[in-house]
Length: 171
Image 1 (cartoon, rainbow, N blue to C red):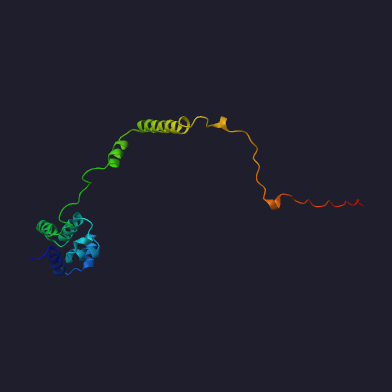
Image 2 (cartoon, rainbow, N blue to C red; image 1 turned 180 degrees about the horizontal axis):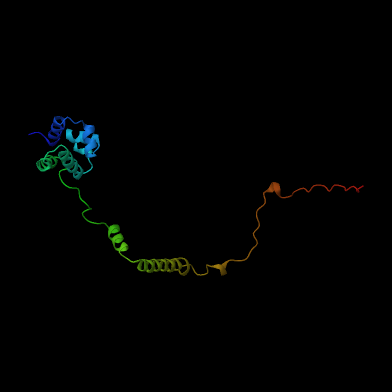
């Protein structure tokens, strides 16, 4: 028995239509129609697009789509990639998935309260780590006042001042 693509091609040629004519009628790209007729289903991103294209072509070519779709299901079941529907979600959601799921269910007030609590906890923890756990005697009272003097390189220790110029009386 001829494949679905071969049946569509035979009917299209019997009706005297080109691929471009069929593409114009069905609004399906000509390269997808060519792939469909050649049985190259990997061009399509999902089986639903293959089935929709076959249904549209069959209707445009005045064929009954039901037997073609049954045969297409048999052809797709032999393909490892297209034979089964893809998983819609991972088997087990991870930690971040569960956390974000619960966070998006909160109202904005609950979110604001949670954010405030997190900020307060961070401030308290920072104060504890930086202030409460400092060694005894450390702090501003242990610093002795002093004057900071920048070290001067030896070749700049003394600078010669320019000699004063005699001033001439004006006039």
